[in-house]
Every structure is written in structure tokens, then in C-alpha cells.
Image (cartoon, rainbow, N blue to C red; front, side, top):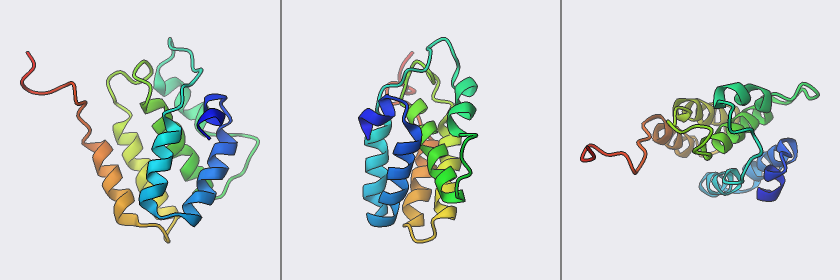
Length: 135
């Protein structure tokens, strides 16, 4: 799926992640999401994340279930957040938090607490290379 996402096959990767959410525990699913979302992208680096987030999130050719739409939105946000050139200030953190919360709402059989903890992690993200001791 990593390679498919690198080829911008967002729909196929989303389908896979929705199926996996139904078949594996939430901890493993989040780990798989993170591994897949580490794929490189071909988004022009002169575009800001806010300019590409919406178009990549929405596929006008599809009418997805709420769960499918939530997973796709999370996947795209996590993928763009992984690219330090598209989101150098890591401002997508609150967006990621909201999208983890949405997946927890749309998939009641998941471990909602784990998804909400992931949301909180991104809401309060501080880049490891940025700390108070740096001058």
C-alpha cells in the first residue's frame, strides 16, 4: 500500500485501510496507517498543504460511506503531515486530531480510546527538534 500511495492511488489505499479497520485491532491499524502514510508524494512543493488537502481528500467521482470518507480524510492529512516540505510548521496537527476523532465516531467497533489518544497526540504535537532549551 505504501507504493500505491506513492503513486497517488488514494482510493485503493483507502479501501484497504477500511477493510483492515474491520479485521485488525486499532493499535495495529494505526501502525499500518502510519507506515503507509510515510510514502513519498508527488505534490508540487511550491503548494501549501491547505491548497492540496481538500482536492486530495475529496473524490468527486465517488459517494463514499461516512467511514470511508473519514478514513480517506485521515489518510490524506497524515500523508501530507509526513512531508516536512508541505507542512514545515506541522500545522496539520489539529486537522489530524479532528480526523482521528471522526474515524472513532464513524467506526464504533474500534478501540475509540486509542483513536482519541492518537488525536490528542497530534493536537499537542511538538516537533522533537524544537524544544525550550534551543536558543
